[in-house]
Image 1 (spheres, rainbow, N blue to C red):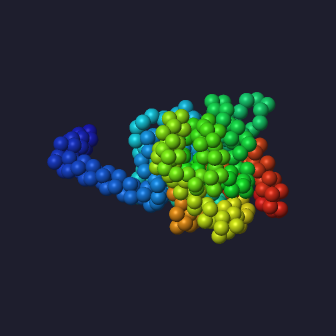
Image 2: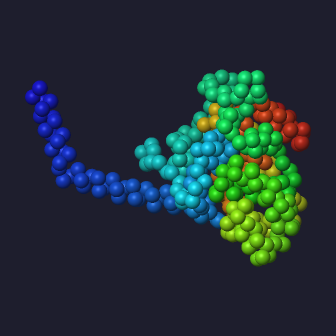
Length: 333
């Protein structure tokens, strides 16, 4: 009893001591330093064309596989603030809600690729009884356009320059909007950008940029429109050097899709060493809105990375399409 009372006195004394307020002041300064470091880190991730947008999206919404609950994503006019928690003795994680370091994540990816396909952590099946089994982020509340994109487009290898340009542009729009919002306007984007014909978009002039950015239904800022036009001109230069934009992009993966073989969506990365390398080369060639996270979203959408969960009905379909298109064998082995 005496020792307990004595410890309580010491505890209260510590709470009232000036040193405790000094520690709080140090904590505030540490938080400020963390915020500054996070801001510099985000600038390195998005080297060109990335500014704060008018959306409250986090990095998780840049991936189709992390955008399962569309209603939870706000499209208000609040500023976009990345959440960068301090973890594992001061390691910054840019993923927001994914609380793992890059090294630990890569170790988990290796484990999942080799073992988790055969058994392990089970997903929650949100599909209706008797319906097709889809990736776990597709729920009964998912928008029809979002589900259709998952079922028909996401992960399907794309080799047309126009369609690749379209997917690169749509992926860049993820900095301001989520996939559902973008897909609902997809036809309008095609009309505004000449069906994403790089040669036609490259010829756009100032009045065209002003007209597109002034269309309230499209909801594209002028700086984003300029990025798309500039990317079209870059695609033309790349096509002259490599024969086609498709040949250039697919050359980064040796013309073979990277097959994830993930059982749970939490293991699907937001960026990979490959997307970092592609992003760096695109930036070197003058492309904009091509940070490594956006590039990986593009790679997933274009089928350069097949990240459907292994028990999704589209996983083997996309792998077979890749085999048929390029004569690849044992790609899923």
